[in-house]
Length: 214
Image 1: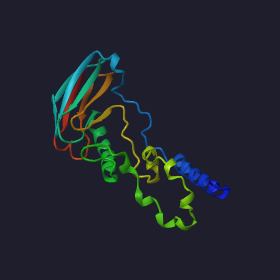
Image 2: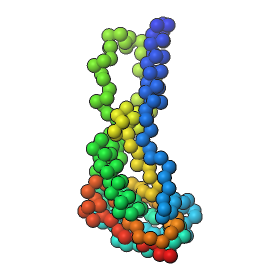
Image 3: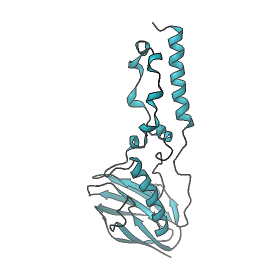
Image 4: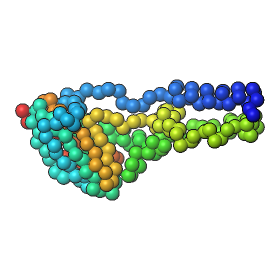
């Protein structure tokens, strides 16, 4: 039976853990607007286009869309690596490549998947500062601690450089053998690119031309 002292200690431990999660900075991208259009619901699509992702290639390599058209892109990854389908111009892709590089360096982005747990910096946890002697392990109810339900993604803010989220509405990541979707309304004419900004993939040729005609 847990005495009052142990109950107080346990309450403080859980309170401190909660404060860490709540105080963690949010690294999800803020709401963005785009000159060339906006995301839309798949049900509003007037056209569906299938794009096959190989390793360092898109098929087709170019697309022509009409301004005002809402297109549902069905993205089939037949390669062995994680790939991205991102709508934008060259400058936007260059900026996004730097963001993706940071995710890769943090361990959040692997060759085949996004690894939420990779963003958690174990180095930021100072195990040496924990006074194990003051913790009454016998009184802790280990069975009540559901380690599997811990939201490691929410704890990523403990290391401020590695908790970025890949949540841009003009982009989707597709794992090997998987299919993803992105629906977009193109609001004005212009020349864009659809590209994979996983580090090194754009430079290896994984980029296509997208022309939005009047």
